[in-house]
Amino acid sequence: MSAHPGSEDSPVGAQSEIQPKPEKLELIDIAYELTDFRSFADLGACWGVDGAYTFHAAELCGNELDRAVIVDGNLTPLTRERAGAHPRVELVQALLGSREALDAVRKVDALIMYDILLHQVKPDWDRFLLDWLPHTNSLIVFNQNWLKTPRTIRFVDRGVDWYYRNVYVWEDDWNTRERLESWFERHDERDEDGRLERDNHWYWQWGIRPLELIGLLAKNGFELIYMKRHRHAFGRHRPWIVNDGLIFQRAAYPERGVGGRLRAAARSVAERTGVLERIRRS
Ligand SMILES: C[S@@+](CC[C@H](N)C(=O)[O-])C[C@H]1O[C@@H](n2cnc3c(N)ncnc32)[C@H](O)[C@@H]1O
Image (cartoon, rainbow, N blue to C red):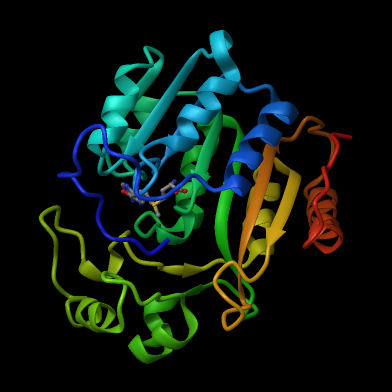
């Protein structure tokens, strides 16, 4: 989600700013039940929740947890404190799409990608996914998916007025029209790592069409095994943004062709939008 940079100075021992969301906890429970993961990495685990989804998944695994890895560009103090009490939780401070992050995670049963895909630029969200696929057999994805245009779009290409009208900008003390305008004005500046400000991962960058996401993964051997859509997650005036919880698994039946997987994915989206239901492994 569009968020302000994690607070390095938040007092150790403090409560997280945001309560873990029941729909995100439930998605991990379902993934655990469906895939029996024993190791996982939570990419972008920190802002607001300080690794809450990691520690929930670690508790589910209990003594059977092999390893858990938190990767974030900004490891918050509370994440560090909590990880200190879990000998099997590793911390990696790195850009999520970097070689450093991929090498540190190596191979895990599952990757948790909550509220991060739409932020990824260079590598872009699709390249980012492809880079991570060899490192796992399951993906647990929660993304703010986009229904307004027929194809996936890059929001900043449409200008600040369009961005303000169509993308979620909530008026709290950080996420304001003023701040959005100031970000657009700084788009050609570079940060200390040499990255262009317009590619900043703290803002919503992509309107990702769910079928493009599902199709990309199907073409690369990952089947959608569960999906739940949360409509109006950003108010009734933004019905084109939906929170989709998705679980993918490396296809168990390699003899099934891409066409079959794509059709199955399309069918499951059609059948399951707005419906709480499990897709049983065939
Ligand atoms: C919107 S927060 C989501 C936090 C949590 N996963 C959740 O669902 O509530 C995004 C988190 O991912 C991290 N993040 C996103 N893109 C990143 C990138 N390219 N490199 C490093 N960290 C990134 C941010 O630091 C932040 O902690």
